[in-house]
Length: 164
Ligand code: ZN
Image (tube, rainbow, N blue to C red; front, side, top):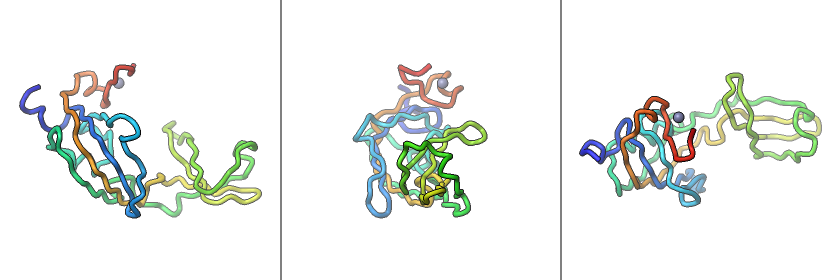
């Protein structure tokens, strides 16, 4: 590894251990339950506020990062909710507020929908990202940094052993 690759910068593949909490202290995600997160830095693979905070960090370095909604999953848009007839959902699924569904938007991207209200004949669906409007509190530790391969840079994402 060259001197320049000892720090997180564009086109490095970075592995981080992290825990992310809400203002309430509730843990919403943590790498402790899986492997460290590995991502390609400088390619918008992670939320902008966290990517900016990681820039220049070194292996073994830890940081507490507070990310405002605008630099995380955006502000909540109250208009981004819609009523659907109950029969638009599978009859055998018991619907309840807080349930999340995967769906596809008009461009074919996978989006998460959250059920907000359930009536006998209709269901209120929320298109906001489940973490929209939330300030996120990260504890991150950089555990590895390596130069990205030319393929990874061209594709804009990390190639794990099982990828492609
Ligand atoms: Zn690829």
